[in-house]
Length: 459
Ligand SMILES: *Cc1c(COP(=O)(O)O)cnc(C)c1O
Image: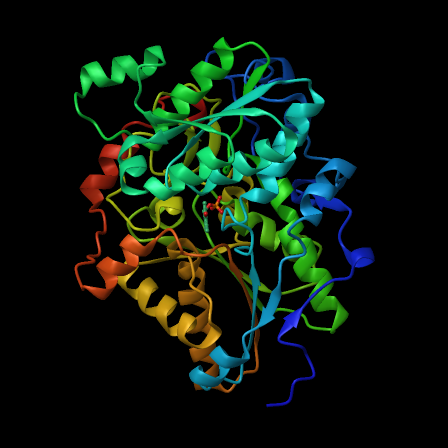
């Protein structure tokens, strides 16, 4: 094996990106604006002010500024765990016997275990800058809640996390970790909000849902003095913060003159994918690259490949602004898939638009195939991948095997968004062969589509 390119490519201090990259600024056709659900007019900063921090509202509504300087305080925060490694997967290439070059950007080296810390740190920073004293959020699988707990610990802010009840029972260590960082973790639905109480009256004994936890977190933020709500995916400001992933990856690859032909990421709400691909997509939009860019989603929750492109709510409580996106309907309830972080009904509006316009490809995978790929990867590369990230591994392996057939030496880059240390229940199910693949029928999807608002914009 010749190793001209090191197995792990790192950046020096002075090579680290100092800006986030706002991909929307380079899109000729912009994603449609968020709409106020009452007036159906584009939302204004004033509409969002009771819920979100000022800094992120500005970023959410900005589709013209290309490079946004990362504040010094956020750079300090990033410095604690970045740059993340960019790894040349020599061992995976060898075991696949492929002429392709495979690289992955690994976001799982921090304690929260995923890329989510990149936006958590930025959002906590802006909250502190606004003079807030606490934040609220929701968490399903637990990754986002942990990332926010770490960020609030660092910036000395209070944090209340509404954790989907069933998940807080299944993942007691996630809860303990958030509490160790100082967060107040409340299983949702709870008795601390009107929406939580109502939901329990309607569905006694319910294990909760992400949509319900979001509704509770927003209610508490709006009712509490000097408190706002933070969201870990889907919105454009979250993708902006995650662009640090792609910026670092591109700088590191440029250092060795490597240009990826195929870029792959897993997609839940779209933040790690959007962050990884941002600078590469920018080049593609400018006609400077022909790279194929591929989103991989679970077959159990296929918002890209089987969803509708429509204005829809971000939560089941129907309290968020309307977002034009690929959606299965806010009322769609995905079957229990082990990749908890990918169980979301909608997709970021920018990625949805790029998909509609043919710049982004998408495919879906069933979970047993995804775990087969995970195990193949971890045996040779030594990293236990998160089930979410393993969707990207599956597609990367498939593309590398295609190269083996055609003899093409393509360069593949994929996002390894996190580690799977808190996902051992999923690996147990895989090992025990009790894992099953649930793919919704068209009739199942119709039920979800029925919840998409019937407004003139959707006609
Ligand atoms: C949350 C999560 C995802 C999915 O979220 P996106 O916003 O689509 O990136 C993917 N991978 C990991 C490890 C996660 O924790």
